[in-house]
Image (tube, each protein chain N blue to C red):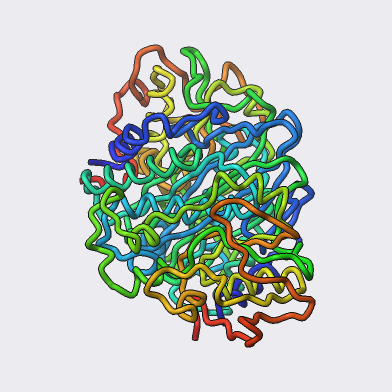
Amino acid sequence: MDEFQLIDLIVETLGPTAQAPWVRVGPGDDCTVTDLPAGHQLVSSIDTLLGGVHFPIDSNPQLIGYRAMMVSLSDVVAMGAKPAFVMIALTLPDADEVWVRALADGIRRAAQVSGAAVAGGNITRGPVCLSLSVHGSLPAGTALLRSGARPGDGVYVSGEIGGAAFALKTGKLEAYAGLDHLDPAGRAYFAPAPPFHLADAIRTSASAAIDVSDGLLQDLGHLCKASGVGVDLKEKLIPVFAGMSVADAVNGSDDYVMCFTSPGFELPGVTRIGTVTAEPGIWIDGVAQNLTGYQHFNS
Amino acid sequence: MDEFQLIDLIVETLGPTAQAPWVRVGPGDDCTVTDLPAGHQLVSSIDTLLGGVHFPIDSNPQLIGYRAMMVSLSDVVAMGAKPAFVMIALTLPDADEVWVRALADGIRRAAQVSGAAVAGGNITRGPVCLSLSVHGSLPAGTALLRSGARPGDGVYVSGEIGGAAFALKTGKLEAYAGLDHLDPAGRAYFAPAPPFHLADAIRTSASAAIDVSDGLLQDLGHLCKASGVGVDLKEKLIPVFAGMSVADAVNGSDDYVMCFTSPGFELPGVTRIGTVTAEPGIWIDGVAQNLTGYQHFNS
């Protein structure tokens, strides 16, 4: 297949998920053209997932596609925004039709779950790599930032911590056969679930938010730094994946759950794990923590 | 330097070009937040430039950064839109501070020329690679597509053809020392000049447009296919880079000039090179052409 046949194959596999009422021009021209609702702002992020670094290169392509969408869209939810559209720059070593169709199927399923249209993209020959630009919208002036946490706020997470790190530790990620064949560890790694349904509630009730990608403590550290505060967590409140120690879980990467602060928040699936403090720092049960989460270029 | 120090270095080098009145939240949170002018639509595209494929890996990093911005923003102009912002996903093998600072300087200079703010990004360890998501805005419903060319329209280009292909042929791209040390061939390759100042004029006067990236004939082929027309070019009208044959120029890649059709267009720097025909096909002086421009995955 040549480049243009591959693009046709992907667009065909995406089906209705390449379109949406707010996508006026979808894949096929120099740019996509999209509408924002009146009075709304655009939120945008870009992420790169490189085979062998961000996922095992021999993983099932459906899982690679699904996960790439979810980990990227997690940033949109962290602003309290509703997903609108995604563009995908795909790099591939060869034009393997079966592999590409499965990848596009995973992307399609994530688009259905998130509500984001896959409105454009690009294919290049090279190592397996996906860069996704993800976009959402929210009422102007309501974006939820990292910087609004205040002493006394509760600290919340939208799901279990440490499942993806557990899956990485097993070293068997290549064995999963697809989205319909995941055990809890495989689900934690390949099918993270940003709480799209909670975006409105989080935006209106939270004071600050961040998505947990590099480890709960490290990402909480970014939130604390931006807000000029600290947090005191309670070990027994942290929802840890079965089989992981708390220490490994809070420093493990790839959770893609939402972490946010709020004067008060009660919704199913959300757990309060601690309290914002005026003094900068991160404590668990009063013990100061070192931040050892994932970093590129650590040296 | 660690990942976060590298990001700080880039943001510092970008200076004011990381900001703009329409960028409400710039680099540093989970997403950027941007405003569109009321009544406007967003145009968006994503491109990947991989070292060793899309540019020689040992090129001057300032030139890599400048060129990456320009070739990506070329798609925004092809819609007749005004550049608004860019997000850059950068992949690097190591944290070379001097290299990264020069890259960011090239990006900064392109941001100044184009008017696009560099509003966000991401850094990952891996082979040298840049993925850019580029965004612009235009009055709702006015996007210029590939599909509007009509028989009898003129065919226009916004600059010379074949200069980048000439530069690629010389094999000396690594020798250029920076933006202030380019000869005409180096300028054609590393400093393409999408006609930002003509975007309004092209949008209101042209019937269809495409940016020339894979070769004039191949890209004109896409425009013709989308419009259901053909084109008859006049060899003596095509502005060809000195030293290139017309045949090599019209099939050479990386021009990043604008090609558009219009019932009539007269502005400095724009050249009429032929006429749209009802019969599908591409002719030069009546001779049918084969399309042999650049394709990934050609096999």
